Length: 310
Ligand code: GLN
Image 1: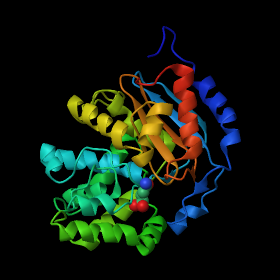
Image 2 (image 1 turned 90 degrees about the horizontal axis):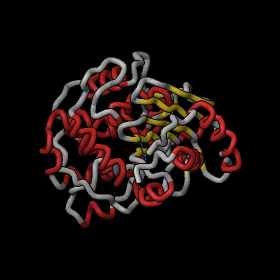
Image 3 (image 1 turned 60 degrees about the horizontal axis):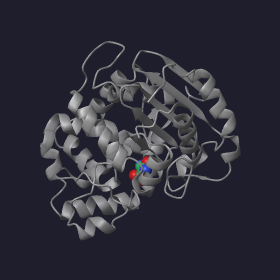
């Protein structure tokens, strides 16, 4: 863990921004959602929030981007609020070892998704909140705005529509879940809610702030408010560590070594329990759909600070 001296995060972030320059051009911006392909591949931002209240940013850290699968962390919180451990009757807690949108395991395992972060599991989680609330997106935005201390966070409806028009695989997964009795709400309602949650726009600073309670036993350091129980922070962190980057999770643990969640918008949010939350954004993805430069940046961060949990 951190040595006697607290790292100089501002200098470290600026070093990381310089040192990752050589990584650009090696990945590819997500284009299976056409509206996402319009983002500049050269964007780079990073934000760190400490449990002691410190905040550090660099580059495009205050520019909002499409959070995509990072939204699954927040819907999981809402579903756990509703169902508690009953959620695990409908979704597992094991890494999938396959792509985020794969149907293969779902078929073999009778519609019981491996974990809440692959698309199949996330659709079940979204179903849990959509079938218990008349306005699930409003509830989700209320939670996110509160956690990130930013009331201006909104959905990019163009991105949501674009995914709705091209989300054939997600539609297949949702129908498959429904056929196995693992979706209660209407398939169209679940998909629409899912596409809209993925199309929420947030900045690195918003996301680092929103995930800080995971580093702080469920407490928001800014207000001292307990936003979820400490045990939930521990449980969600364990799922982030084992399932947060799909079939890239082992390599990410090896290289970076912190619980984290990626999204195809190029964001990765990470948690160092007891210390800090961090978010990086760089839209070029590796072949598994995780930010290529973002992973390199987080690897530099944990190497420079010994902040890996291992
Ligand atoms: N909306 C995206 C999808 O369902 C989210 C995937 C991701 O960010 N990994 O394909």
